[in-house]
Image (tube, rainbow over all chains, first blue to last red; front, side, top):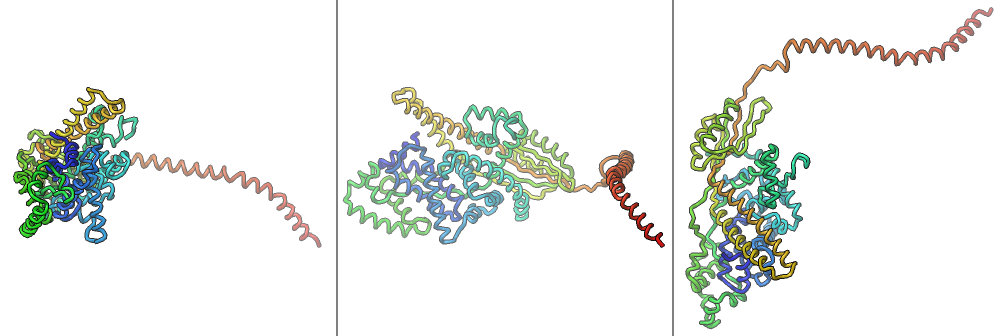
Length: 181
Length: 371
């Protein structure tokens, strides 16, 4: 199987097939990345498309020195930040609202989403990058421009804080869900 | 947790679970965890958080098509494109494309969130390579992999008896206990929190047995489709193994400079770490699918008891007597100490004032006795 990096080098040389192969490999992971962070499913789809378009437009500058996956999520993260900046100027959404509504069923993982909202925003982002997007510590450090040890300590702190938050959320949420049924 | 008691930091347990520790270091941490209750508890807590986070499921991903390159790049894109462009003049293509785009925009505007891009993709995709349309829409050929979870909140008469029953249920169903915590609440009743892992096919049976242990206060069930995650991990694993193989072949030749060889060795180590991390992740996904997770909380019904306080009546009577004697002795000693403390001061003032007082008395007596 051709590696991501080889495919990306082929994309740089102008191969449409290589680009479609990369799109197939990462479209779901990238869509999930955005879906957990923006309230509107169609907006998540648009941002996924924007990311791949940015990859395509910047393919001539791709050097192939690092993992393609890190490169891809780096671009996705920048696009997300730009979108959040736009959203904050429009004052139409906030991250809390994004997380709270990012599920097809309102009950799905509600207690987890509520617990996540209680975390410090930076810690929450690092935790989500690790748990949901499966990024390595080094990739997160690169993405967030943080020292590796800071990523480790924040991730550890976030997990312990989330455990406490989940425990306080769980009982009340279970009751609510049970009553609803 | 101190460095004296544990050969690693708490963060290293997390790194081990995340597959971020080098293999040798991870082995050291794993063998310590096997013998240390505190570290095992932390391991279980961290795993529990990851498990809980996975209960946030997303709606299925939409069918998306790869975006087309911008106009200035399209000309250089792929040999098939060049052939396609070579058959017709640029002007004809431009006019045809604009017309086709306009038609497709109208047709697809109802469903496509990005009508222009979607329409262009559909149009050019069918012109260039019709079979890619089917390929671009991801359709997993594998059977779905579902990780099932359940949460139960019960009210039981006796938490200790419930604990034994739960052990029996888990054992009978060939499952295992993830974690068990029992604590006493402020009203003296006990509270049990446990994570049960039972074979996914026997989840319903397990839930029926557990429900029978008390009154159900709350209950929920979930199913997380991890098929995409498994495919994703498998793809990345295959990529990394391929990279590792090529790097090892490169190292065997050793034709480059020393710096290049060292860089390649570092890259091999990094790739190996990543493979181990993904392997662990893959096994974890398999476990999540084959074993369902039941998060259980059992509250004990409150039992009011007559509390006479700690200790028997005779011992309490003896203690009171001893306390009485101790208080009497203590008060006598205090009085004696006050006397000892004050007596020298009184003596000093008496000596100091007695002569002036006698002189004053004599003088006043002399004055009154004169005729």
